[in-house]
Every structure is written in C-alpha cells, then in structure tokens.
Image (tube, rainbow, N blue to C red; front, side, top):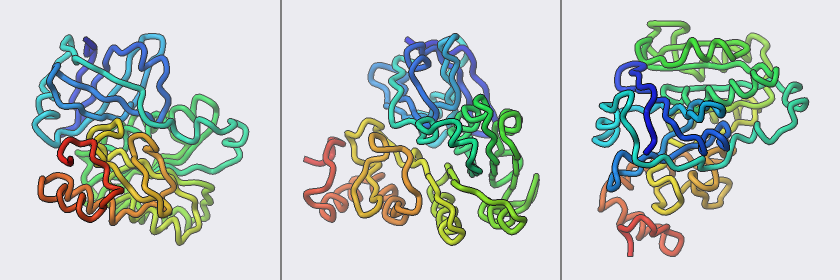
Length: 292
C-alpha cells in the first residue's frame, strides 16, 4: 500500500497528492509517469510525476477529474492509500540527457496549457537546480483554472501567464504570447509544449513557421500506460510509435496530431475500436483485450 501524505484541491476538479513511493522517488526523472490503482481490481490510471523528494521517498501527482475513477480518487484523503503505484514509466525528458553546459548555452521556452503545467514544472525545476533558466508560458481558460503559479514562478527565468478570457495576466492563447515574445526580440533554441492535444498542435504550427524546434509530451492520449492497449498509438515522422513506451516526448513537428486526436475520440467506443482495427489492419495493436 502507498500512503497519501497530502491531498489538496488546487482548483475546480484538479487535485494534488503527495504519495509515499520510495522506489519510484529514488529513480524517477522529469518527464516520466506512474500508474496508480485504488484497489486490487481498480482501473489503472497513468499520471505524470509532478514532483519528487528522493530523501523523503515522496512523489507528487496532479490529476483532473474526467471520469468515475478519477472522481473516486479525488475523494481520497491524507492517510488513505493507493493499492499500487507503478513506475517510473516512460522515457525521461531529453533535457536530462544533455550536458548542463550545453543547456546553459540554449534559450529554452516551455509552454504549459491547463493541467500540462504539472509535467512542465519538474522539468523547469530540474533546470533551475542546475543554474539553467528557462522562460515559461502558462495558459488556462480562466484565472480560476490556473495551477502551480507560485511554484512555477520560483523556478522559471521569466513567467508569462495568459488566460483565454483575459481574466488574469495576458489575454489570449499561448500561441499569441509566443508570437509576441518573438516579435519583441526573444530568440529560442527549443520549445517544450505540454497541454491539451489541440494546444500542442497549434503551438507546433506556429513554432514551425518561426523555425523553433519543438518537443511535445503526448501524455494526454494514454490509457493503459504500458504499451498493451494501443490507445496512445501515434504517427511520428511517418512511423508508428506508442506514447507510453516510446515517449511521452516526441518531435512536435513530426507528430500527426489530426490522426492522434481522431484515434483518441474513436478509441472511447466499441464501434470506434472496431473501425480502427479495420482501418489499421496488421499494424493495429490488439493488446487492449477488445481485439482478438
């Protein structure tokens, strides 16, 4: 059992939990995720690691209520426990593999949309701990849906907050902030964008025009999280990849977002899964149990 030592509602339907998981905390790196289960027969829920404390053996997860399982998860309190916490899973951020001196010479921009702020934070914090500053754009629909602003401000070089409705910070989409910063003379060697699929798609369209290499994290399309179900299948540079085992990070300019979003919608229904099996033929991944 994995004890919950902190449970907090960050904003409407978005929750943070600190969980005792010493082995995960010892080995995890920014960009990776865990799978949690509330009971022996419970649903496997993939969640990005938002933070970790190796000495205390604690990992921090942030999740949004999107269904029955996460709604039940939100009812858990400090002192309750998860039956399983499996991880770390997925590949660490590419940044963790680069030489710190090389990174210091780069101008890095992060774009975080909504709950995507949670997986952006550990990467920015990791850089900050090594004396590397990165600019961060945080976007949400409204001020009330912003999360981890204080924490992000403490580790970011420059933090730009924008809301779709203009209720806080700048007004407009994150793409407009990117455009404004470049117009103001800012140069970026790489952009890392994490958030809703549609946001990442339009960020990549803009950064392609601006000639800024862009990395995206495709954690929004995961279901099983171990390469078994095939829900996170995505085409990257014309090749089939699975976000949970090959990613979650990919070259955003090579990702077929339209296909990924279409699959994400179809995979939710039995008829949709049957259609995907028919369309994808021998390349269809059948580990989900729905496809013989």
